[in-house]
Length: 94
Image (cartoon, rainbow, N blue to C red; front, side, top):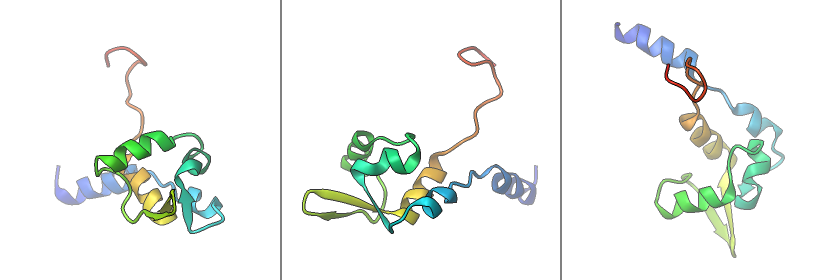
C-alpha cells in the first residue's frame, strides 16, 4: 500500500472527540472531574497513576492540591489513545 493511501486511511480512522471540548465550560478540567468530562471513559485514579509514570497529559498544572489539565491537550491525549473496536467475536478469537 502506498504512503498516500495509508495516510488517507489513518485520517479516516482518526476518532474525533472534539465534542468533549465544545461541551466543557472551562479551559481546564480538574483531575477529579475527568470521568464527568469524558463520559466515564477516564478515571481520576488512572490519570494520577499515568502522571506518576510520566505518561499523562502534557501541560497539566497544579493549584494547591488540585491538578488541572488543559482541555485541548486532554482531548488530543484521548484521541491518540482511542481506537475502533476490532471485527472479531467479543471475548473470542477473530
